[in-house]
Amino acid sequence: MMAEVGGIDDYIERAQPFIDSGRLDEEEMDDKLETAKRLAEVRDSVFAEEAGWPSQVGRELLQTNLSGGGWRASDVIGKWVRDEPVSALPALRDLWAEDGAPPGERVTTFLSQVPDDPNFTGVGTRLRPVSVLLMALGPGYPPFKITEFRNAYKATGYPEPADEADEGDHYEHALAFLDQLVERTAALGLERPRNRLEAHSVLWMNETKAPHQPPTPGITTRTGDEEPGSLEALADELLLSAGFLHDVERLLEDKGQVIFQGPPGTGKTYVARKLAACLAGSPSRVRLVQFHPSYAYEDFVQGYRPSLDTEGRASFRLQNGPLVQMAQHAQAKPDAKHFLVIDEVNRGILAKVFGELYFLLEYRDEPMRLQYSDEPFKLPRNLYIIGTMNTADRSIALVDLALRRRFHFVEFHPDKPPVEHLLGWWLERNVPEMDWVADVVDLANEKLDNREAAVGPSYFMQDDLDEDKVALTWEHNVLPYIEEQLYGQPGRLAEFDLDRLRRELGGGGEDDGPVAGEQEGETESGDAGD
Picture 1 (cartoon, helix red, strand yellow):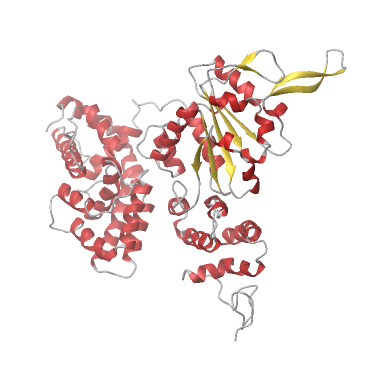
Picture 2 (cartoon, rainbow, N blue to C red):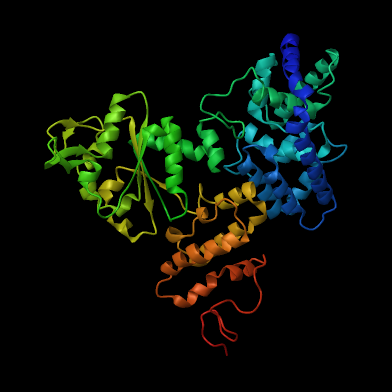
C-alpha cells in the first residue's frame, strides 16, 4: 500500500526544521534508544533465566514513559509474567527471538497467551505494551500508539487497516507506513529519518510539536494518546479504567445522581470533583458543599438568614442555598451540564436537610413549592449530583432506604475496581522504588478484615514519597485510624507495626529486636508463652 506521494513528502518535510535543530535527538531519539538498551538488558536476563527476571519485565514496562497512558495494560502483562513465569517465559522468548516469526505474527502469538482481563481490551490498549517490549530487538521495532498512527494515515492519505485487523495486522501496517517514510526521505535527498525508530519520532513530532498544529485552547498537556478533556484522558490521569468512568456517566444520565461510597482515603471526593469538572466542561459549573450535623435545610436549599436593611437595621432575608443557586444556573444554561458535589453526605441529618428534595430528585419534570416560597420549583435535568459517603462512619446507618432508592451507589473499596491496585499503579508511575508500600497496605487490610474500614491508597499518594514519609504517615495517620477500628482489642495493634508488616512480606524493615509492644517470650496476643 502506498500513501499519496505529495502527502507523505509534505509530512516528511514538515519535520525537517525539528530535525535540523537537534530536537529529534534531544526530545525523541535519546530517550527511545536508552529505553531500547534497557529492554535489551531485560531480554538478556530473561533468556539467561537470571534471578528476578519476571519482576524486571514488569518494572521496565511500567517505568518506560513510552508506554504512554497504558499503565493498566502494562500491569496486566507484568502481573502475568510475575504470577505465571513458567508459561510467560516461552512466550517472551518467542517474542524476542533473533530469527523468529514476522513482527505481526510475534505480536498475535504473544497476546494469545496473555490471560483475559477487563483492563486489557481493545487493539490499541493490547498492542501498546507489546510494541514496547519489542523495542528490545532494535530500531526496526518502534513503539505503537493507535491514535498517533491513525492521525498520520489521515494526514498523508495512507489507507487504514481493515476493520477486522487484529493487533498483529495493525503492527505490520504501521511498520509498512514507517518504511515508506524512510524510502521517501531517501528519494527526497534528505538525511533523516533513516530507520523505523527515527520515522516513528518524525510521526510523533508531527503529532505533538509541529507549528501547523496549534494546541487546543485550555489544554497545556496531553497524556497517552487520548483526546484532552475526554473521559479517556481523565482515566489516564487518575489511573482508573475509562470503562468505569463511562459507567458512572451512564448512571448519572439515568437518575441524575450517584453516591460514591467506601472507606476513607479511597479518592471518592477527588474523583467526584475531577469527573464533575470533566463532564461539565468547566470547573465554574461545579459547586462543592460538605454536610455535617449542624447543616440544615436553610443552609442547603433555602431559608431566612439574618441581614441588615438599607438603614442598618437587623432583619431577615430569604436566601437561596447552593441547591437552588445551582438549579438556577442550570436553568439559565440548559445546554450545559452543571454539578453539585456533596461531600460526606451521610454526616448530615438527611431528612431535615433534603426536605422536598426527596420528591424532586425522583420527579425532575414536576415542580413543587419549597418550604419558604410560593414560587414553583423543580430540579432541571442538566443539574447532576455526586455525593460521597464514608462507610467507616457509623452514621451511615442514618441513610434511609427512601434516599438510597433515589441514588445509584458506586463502590470505592480497596479490594475491588476502581480502587484495587490503584496504589501499586501510582507508585510504579511516580516512585517505583517504593512499590513495597502497596503490598504493606494490602497485608494490613487483610489483617484488619473489614472492607468498610480498610486503609485507602491516598494516604501514600503524596509528592516526594520516601521511606521517612511513609513511616511518618503510618505512625500518625494509619495506626490511629486502625486503632479506632480495633476498639476493645488493644493487643492486636502490634500486628500493624510497619516494620513487622515489611518483615512478614520479606521486604526489609528494622530488625533490631522485638516489635514495639512485644516483649521477648510473649506471643502475638501479649500472653506469656509456655
